[in-house]
Amino acid sequence: MVGAVIFDAYGTLLDVHAAMAGHAARIGPHWQQVSADWRAKQLEYSWVRSLAGPAHHRDFWRLTEEALAWTAARHAITDAALLADVLDAYRRLSPYSDAPEALRRLRNRGMRSAILSNGEPGMLRDAVRAAAIHDLLDAVLSVEAVGVFKPDPRVYRLAVTRFGLPANEMAFVSSNAWDAFGAAAFGFRAFWLNRTDQPVEYGLRGIATELSSLSVLPDILA
Image (tube, rainbow, N blue to C red; front, side):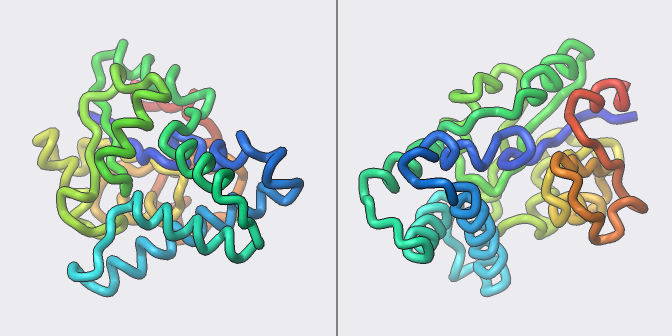
């Protein structure tokens, strides 16, 4: 039995490329590569900070700003107003089209759900309200409670503490293969949301259920 469903936020419920997409005309035809570089550097910074130890922790919003600065330098983007607009848009990312309905169906079936994210509390609060999914969640959990980023086990333990359930009685859903692996290693019933048909890594097909869309999740958990 699954007593709660835990979701990653960025890339799983929220479209991390929506901020750049909304300013594509100002960025240019290479905006997708710019967005991909921003995302990759943002995650790299989180892993390096975690590995370096507690004294080097910075919250995810600060890392998002730093990653955007690096990406702008890499692609010679010097329009400060554009960069400010893109950064602001990151706090109001669009949800993926299948996310609100999946959350709604889970709620209608009496199943509890939450976000467990690298995001810091303020950016998560803004994001879930802008996406109009705040009323569909029982909790929004941030790594800032433990001062380290996923896939550190201390992060996943936040969900166990919040819901009072063992990990194997909760589902964890992420579009990030490394996050799905970390959740499975912790003991969650893991779901890898492979939206873009990426190659399998971390042996996920042996330890997680692969999804192409969130639309099928409520039926699987029924």
